[in-house]
Image (tube, rainbow, N blue to C red; front, side):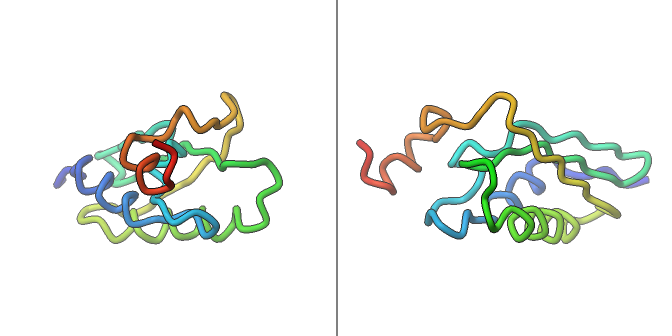
Amino acid sequence: MAEINEAEVMDALHECYDPEIPVNIVDLGLVYGIDINNDEGKVHVTMTLTAMGCPVAGDVMAEVEMRVREVENVKDCKVELTFDPPWSPERMTEDAKWELGMV
């Protein structure tokens, strides 16, 4: 079976944006982990949101699933939402901080 390229999965996640902040979820530090099961063609993404009770949580998760499923050899994607550890601005990349005028 052909393998799923982790770099392509990360590229797909870089195309997912928080609807309220004009920065992708990777640079915001919302992605906590990616597990790839090449035997089954599945990707499991563990992520968080900037705030509990985010009204667009379902939209963000659906976009992550959709974009990852578009990656070659991916048959399915599951997104797990966690708030442990809680997100904080320290998780953002320098690029995100620059984009938001925080540096």
